[in-house]
Every structure is written in structure tokens, then in C-alpha cells.
Amino acid sequence: MKPSLLIVDDEKDMLKLLQRSIRADIDCEIFSATDALSGLHIVETHSIDVALLDIRMPRVDGLELLERIRSIDSFITVIMMTAYGVIEVAVDSIKKGAYDFITKPFEHETLIHLLTKAFERSRLLRENRHLQRRIQTEQTFQNLVGMSPAMQKVYDTIQMVAQTDVTVLITGESGTGKNLAARAIHAMSSRSSKPYVHVNCPTLPESILESELFGYKKGAFTHATQDKKGLIEEADGGTLCLDEIGDISPAVQTKLLQVLEEKQIKPLGQTASLHVNIRLLASTNCDLREKIAAKQFREDLFYRLNVVNLHMPPLRDRREDIPLLSHYFLKRYNTEFERDKKGFSPELIQLFLEARWEGNVRELANLVKRGVVLAPEDTIRPEDIGWSSSRSSSECPADRYLEMEYRVAKQKTLADFHNRYFENLLHRAEGNVTRAAQICGLERQHLQQILRKYDISAERFR
Image 1 (spheres, rainbow, N blue to C red):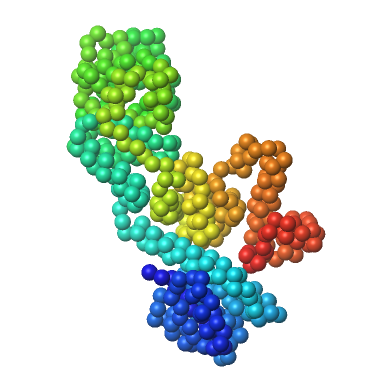
Image 2: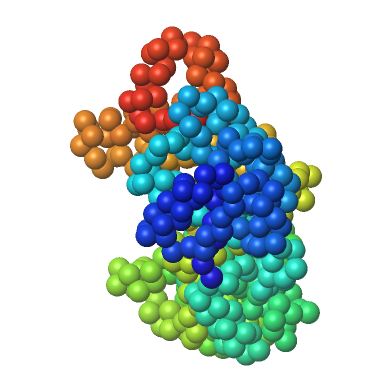
């Protein structure tokens, strides 16, 4: 479906010129009107994405039309057209909700660039609204969120293996949801009413992990003052998930292999073995084949674990899920912190879509949580989570430049600092350069020089 554009201008020749020039570069449906009331009727009867309004019109001017349009549909992106010399009026339109303004006479390329950005903004706003409604009405798949082909493949695999007792090796980078996938397999299995025992292997020292997994009898070692049931026995009848199994020691690997082969365990200090009925799931963020090659992981254990491999895709490989995930976490943290944030600015959603996400879904969740807690307004913007609106990566600037030549790294670090500092400053000063200069302690002229040097426009913050 083509995006739609409404043009309102009382000069018929200007309307014809605009329609002809815009159609040459943008594939969109164009509606036009020569007065505000006719334009308002079009908004009421059609779905409009972007409105291009002349400010100076008889009876009802562009500013009043702007306010009426926003009262009907606040998701329409409005651009104001103004003649040279009345910039103050155009700036006032920004404060009343216009996206931007353009001064007549304008260059064709400038207009097309502005309209392209406006259509993209409108698309993101409507997509955000659609996703919010979907989150409110749809259930997630066992707490896993995503509609991308990559996640549909994950869901299909979970559904296929859940009703069996096969051992599953869940692989993927940190923060991709491996633990959620393991819980989903258990929840959809015939063992769901039985225990689910999750063991985070790296958090337990080797000497403790073995006794925690297999248990021990009183007197088995110095501090064994009573019998202790191991976690494997605790999971009897249910599911045992060993998280980051690549970090366990060779000794524990050997004992675990015996459990898989014989379905028996022998607690420390006990001579008789115990039969256990468990379904084993294991997860890892490392390449176990590399560990096998380095003699750090048993090959026979790997094949016992890797009966079915479930790979959790990194967030960068399912970017289409990012808006849906963002709104899912927004709803969760609104409830947790008793806030009422409405959504994200189009600029922030665009940055989310472009980020590297080395921390994957967990990193996204933490950023949304930060925004819910810190954002001063209903809409979460880049500066609310400590990002620059020009940022295209979620990585730390200092880390980003460590591999660069010193001179280049220094220049890029300074540019990043100035962008983040002065964009935040202008946000606080609502685009008023004089007030911004007073806040930061610079002379107004000096501040303007810096803004020009780093191509930072104060008008965007008004």
C-alpha cells in the first residue's frame, strides 16, 4: 500500500507544481486542497501519512489546521511551508506539533529529502502503535517474543522436541534467550508438572559443582555434616537444565556422561547407585567443537548432548523483531515500576534497528528499563537512555575506537562527545541557544560555532 500525502495550499499553481515534482521522485498517493476546511475533510475521510501545509491561508490558517489535524490523528507527520521572513511562525508550528518546516522558495532536493524522512517517521509511528496493540492482544510463545522467520523456526523446533525426552543442546550468544527456550521445552512437555531444575554451571566452583549435582552422604568429606540430595536427584521425574555446560570440568563431564548412559547417579560417599528419571537440557554460548579440539570437552559427551541442536539467533539476525520486543519490555517495565510511558520516538526505534546488539535481547531489555525509569516525558528518546540521536551502534564509544589510529580515534571520540553533550544540552534548553549557552557557561557566539562545526541544529529541539 502506497504512503499518502496531503498538500494544502491556497495557490492552485503551487499545488500543481508540488504534485508534479513530488510524484517524479516519491511513489505515493497525493491528495490536495486549496483551503484548510477541505484539507480537514480529507483527513477525516482518508488515511493520511504526511501533510504538507501552507501557513498563510485565508479564514483558517495552517497553524489552526495543524492543531485540528493532530486532534484527529496525532500520527500524521506534518510539515509546514512558509514564506521567507516569517520563520518565527514556523518555529511556533514546531512547538505545536509539526515535524518540520520548509521555507519558500525551496529546492526540490530539499523537499524530497524532508518528505522521505517524514514518510519514514510516519511509518515508524504507525508500526509502533500497531505493535502496542498486538502486545496487548497476543500471547507470547512461552515468554519468547518474536515473529521473524528465525524465531518461527525456534518455535517449531521447541514444539517438535517438547513431547519427547531427547536431550537438547541449546546454543547461542549470551542474551539470546537460551534459558527461556529451555523453560519453554519443559513447560510444553509431559514433565511440566514435575520439577524444573536450572543449574548455572559457571557460578559454582568445580569442587562445589560436583557435590551440588550428585549430592553426598554425611561424612563424605570434612564439612559434610548431613546427607544432601543432589540437583540431579531433585530433578527426578522432571527436567534438568545445565546452563553454560562448556565450562564444567573434565571430571564432572565424565560423571555426567555416565548419568546419560546409565540413568544412574552415585552421591559422594555412597556405594550404591540411584536410578534417576530426568530429561536433560544443556546450553552454551561457546563453540563446543573448538573445546573438543583443544581437549577441554569430551567428544563423546558432546554427541550425547547434541541429539537435537536448538540455536537461538542473535538479535542482529532478527531485526524485524526489535520493535515488538521493545514494546513488550516497555509494557513489562511500566508495570514493574508503576510508570506509564507511551512508547519510543521514531529516532530511537531507528537507532534500535541499526544497533549491533552485542548483548542481544538482554541488552535491549536493560535499555528499555533504563528509559522507563529515567525518561522525563511519555515518549522515550535516545538521550533518555544515554544515546546520541546520531548514534548507529550500541557499543561504548571508548571501546569502538580502541583499534583505531590514535589521531583518528581522538577526532571521533571528540565528535561523539560534542554530539551527545550538545544535543542533550539543547534538549534541556528546548532549542533556545541563548539559554543553552547560559546553562553550559559558554558565550552564545562560541556555542553557535561549535554547533555549526558538528552540524547540530537547534531547531530540532524546539
